[in-house]
Image 1 (cartoon, rainbow, N blue to C red):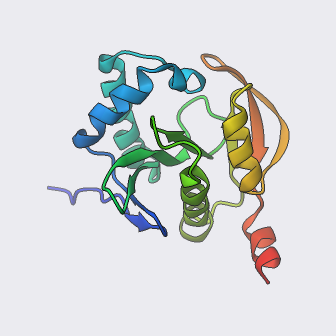
Image 2 (image 1 turned 135 degrees about the horizontal axis):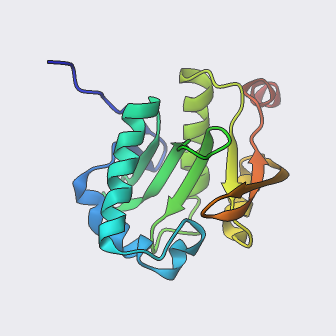
Amino acid sequence: MSTPFAIPTIETERLILRAPAERDFPAMVEFYGSDRARFVGGPTTPELTWRMLAMEAGHWLLRGYGRWIAEEKATGATVGMIGLFNPEGWPEPEIGWDLFNGFEGRGFATEAGRAARAFAYDVLHLPTVMSLVKPPNTASARVAERLGCLREGTFLHERHGVMDVWRHPSAQALAEAAA
């Protein structure tokens, strides 16, 4: 019998980034069934949301990285799903963020995005990462800007259509800026 794959847990100032779990399903159904999910493949049904939850957990097993559930430390509430994403059809690993209903506009995506980027560079040793933002999702574009990303072009996805590619600063550029 093989050892189970362990998804790492990361803590930030206000968040715990942890493995997706079945207990996250109700918050996911609420978000992905709402109009707020229109930039990330929704709105969708509970059945398709279940498949999405399973895909997110399986992404970790197949790629060795993935998106975490962001949980607010103070309340234990499920804030969203944030982290590295690179399914078939994606041009390269991206840092993606889906903030669930009621948690937008509080800096959670930026905070978790920084932690995900540090994981990408410090643990996975990726040379670069990007974020894909579907126009006109101006809120996500602002998160990309706060993370220091520069818009470098577009990517045409077979289901999601045209998406803007936002390039994150490299690990070296971040280190130089911090020095």
